[in-house]
Image 1: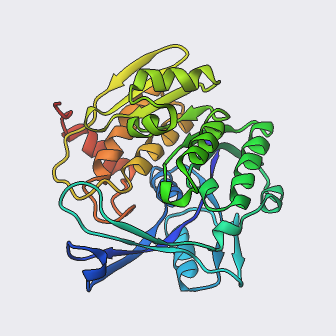
Image 2: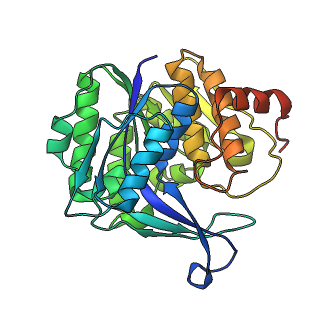
Length: 317
């Protein structure tokens, strides 16, 4: 297996201990968060070599993130640090159904100051896959420019590129700019991982087949569309299929499920598995994630994943 490179913004995370509006919560659990961080942890627990490229502040949140990466076996060689800008953090509400309330403290963060010059210093030796989400280009004008440049350099270096739109409308000036930018990035990727609700915003359709056909026409090798309780629809130049997901034992929240899904796809592809087996693994990890309190604490090892897939039936919808 070759190394997988991720780029993004890891953050400090405070998780509400009780339900209710964040302004009324009196007690929080502390952890770390970030879509790409979750994917990196998922990949490492599945024994895939992974490095995380980001910029952190020289502060306690930054130090905690470094510790989290090291504890999870993720390479820190691509990290850089800033004395002028802080590491971002976020608050996350507690819910018994649906999506939790989220509030970010990431404006002008260290990661939002990643530039083309930072990308120029990267070496792609030993890497086989680059994974990016739509969050990184949303952070600032400089990260937007850096995102396009990173994809260009990675492609020239022969890396396979994976892209998860992972919409964060609150980080963009308007929906039109978000859709145009993310579609442009998706059209440069080999694997595109949208959700059906994201397809409605980016392409004007929730139809998985139409979403898949659009990005395949733009040059993708495969498109995997997350379809919630129905699992995922996958389309490549050779096949297309709907893959069921697994029955959960309990529901906590949906945060991190898409990141676990991405870790499943990337790890399976890096191990040479078929697209169908990749989607089945991704669905399993996504289901495991909705049963976990933190954004990444529940991500499984290989043994835990196998045990889950061996003992859980497919969800009936």
